[in-house]
Length: 273
Ligand code: GTP
Ligand code: MG
Image (cartoon, rainbow, N blue to C red; front, side):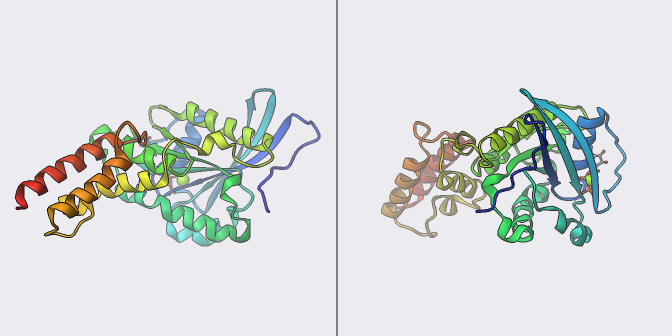
């Protein structure tokens, strides 16, 4: 099986790794990298043309890591330029803007593009992913909350950080966790260590919470047809209650989802004879 093992230099303790940034145009990928590498923020938007490349050295425990950063352009126009750069990455920064829901919804298609371009090399277990919920300084325009972002990330075994390239919030912590995980992975023979992927809840629980959040009414929330009987409502409720009960489910947002399900059941039963 193919792994994305980095090239080792002569010195046993130094590593060379490749990381890439992904996400819609204007979400702040370049600014996050600039904040970390140059400790500054540029408020004016300068779209990345194709790819920006940079190198930085970091120390993780007793190792020196040389990080090659490929900062991708998010605009669809640059697809032809960036598609060659997915291969051989050990780390991916997946960035969205907490004030733009479409940039959050687009994360799945970014993963899709990556898998497609990597083809037979697409071994996602050999890559560390960090999700950056960026622009958290702009609190008034926020539309994707922490629970929703964290759930998406952690249900896939990805790290999740709230960041602001503008204020610097979360940036150093995020990069430290990112590089430290990549180092762990390299020391673990190119596989993401198991502890990183086991998050204490199942994909079914995560998907159910997401479905409940996006449901349009109480029928939809319980997953029954409008006009369902009391028995059908109760049966659907019991199934969800077992899955999401706060004693059993530690997924982010499970408590709110459980309460919403209880309320949905109560309101439906009131109107069914
Ligand atoms: P492409 O290169 O086109 O894919 O965009 P990008 O994702 O690299 O976005 P970039 O880093 O260029 O930032 C886009 C705009 O958002 C710029 O005007 C930045 O100043 C602004 N920006 C980036 N991060 C933040 C942040 O954390 N907070 C605020 N308030 N603005 C930010
Ligand atoms: Mg950019």
